[in-house]
Amino acid sequence: MMDESSKILARHKKTTGQILGHMPYGMLAFCDDKIIASNLDVHQISGLNFNDLESEGVTETLTLVGFSDADRQRILSCVSIHGKEMQCAPEGRFPAVIEVTLQPLDINQPDDGYLLILDEHRSKKRMEKSLQAYSTEIRNHKYALDQAAIVAVTDLSGNLTYVNDKFSEITGYPKNELIGSNHRILSSSHHSDAFFQQLWETISQGKNWIGEVKNRHQDGNFYWENKTIVPLLNAKQQPYQYMSISFEITERKAAEEELRLHQVHLQDLVEQRTGELTKTKKNLENILA
Image 1 (cartoon, rainbow, N blue to C red):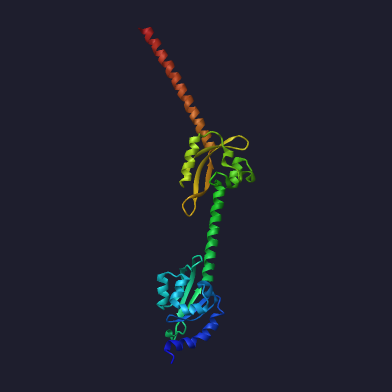
Image 2: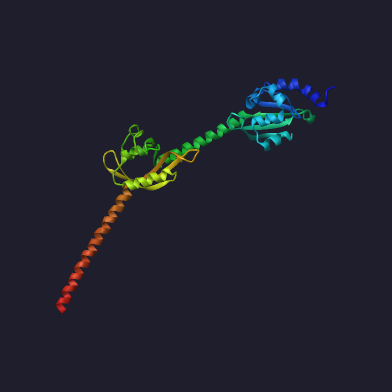
């Protein structure tokens, strides 16, 4: 004689299997821990065919799909779920987000079992939409940065792998000559070896470097930059590229130099005048003595 659970399985197995086979997302029908029916999407997500799923049962199948303990228990509690996004990590696959819905097979007979819907496609579309929005935001930020700053990226040896239009403009070199060239192409010989040694020691340790650098234009003229070098780190928190963001300060440096020379000139005049006054004072003292 068939027990109640077997009767329920027999009643739903044929019709449920036919319906699930035409659905565009993963669907799995179960009663207690027994799987009544499943479709191809569930087989692809779990890596098991129907016979394997049927023998494994619901609990083990949810484990194979890679749900967390908390999410697995929530599903097995058989409390209705409506479009809840849950993370899963099937063995041998990248972690994914799946939209989960759980509802009775028959709303009037909840003991007959439940239908579990795993909509990976909808979650993928949401993720793609989020990534698209994020990509647009990144492009906008890059555009704004390129309008204001001189930007370059180098590899760990200092060879240029990317330059923006402003970098090409300020250096006088076309982009195709800059890409692949070492940053030393711009050296003005103004800075000491110790200056660059300290710079490289800083960024190779994954730390930002900020300072003023004097470089040489292609035509031989010099220009100054206020430069920030940011190490781009990999998953191991080690630099794999360096990004340089600079602003030209040539006019400011020229003004500072002009002010310095003016101050030196004033100091010379003060010392000269002081010397003349001292000499005059001594002459007057000699006359009055």
